[in-house]
Image 1 (cartoon, rainbow, N blue to C red):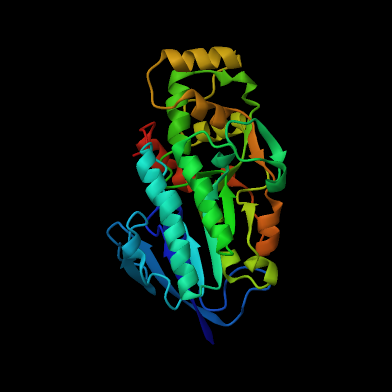
Image 2 (image 1 turned 90 degrees about the vertical axis):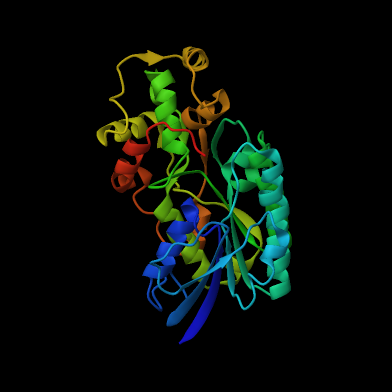
Length: 330
């Protein structure tokens, strides 16, 4: 039985933690993907600047910070697969550049020096800008980021592609640990307590455990196309309508029931502006308008089904969402 050596950066983050759980739960030869390398063990090196948690067997921890280039020396030594999952999504433009752009470039240089055979990097569909976007694939869109976070993440993608890596642009990620998507909906609904222009806006979402399942399947899948540099969308192929999401959150007592009153888009934006809160007009538009992207290719390449969709996965995260409410991230 051969052993694959995998390094995971951002290992204590929202997505990174889910990926580590997935790696730890899988036994040798059980990678869950069509054509995966059977009879294969895994050794995991988890990289994080935060304190490393206990309780995951088979995981070796290493402290490093993408914003501190010298700390990355040796993180990829002896590694077959790099899962690059670390990012900074806050408002500090200098840290965005240090982590998402310069830090990712330094990590890719280290991966190349170490001869890593497969690189998978997590990015975001926020690089496309304000939209609306309705079902386009990667080649049909030109990125137009409007924030320091999304702009620096787009810059980081260039270093990944230059290193021969695969970039995964994810939609909005749901699940226990989500500090942005659903808390933003809670804050926005408090300020705009009505249906949002019929609730017809559709967006791309993915449950964090399904995203982890996709990343791990791609890490172990066979096929030369897996190692070809490129960009794929990484979320559930079926978009979620805003009113369906709001109703599902109400069923889990995360939100009050959606009222019968329905406000026009203009009235929604006016109410949002008139009531203090942390969700901006741009963020509200991202949540309530059309921002969905074709995402069949990643699941096909991984050889696994996308599952029933993120709304069916909300139950295990409901308590987290109820306790967090509309608290701002950070």
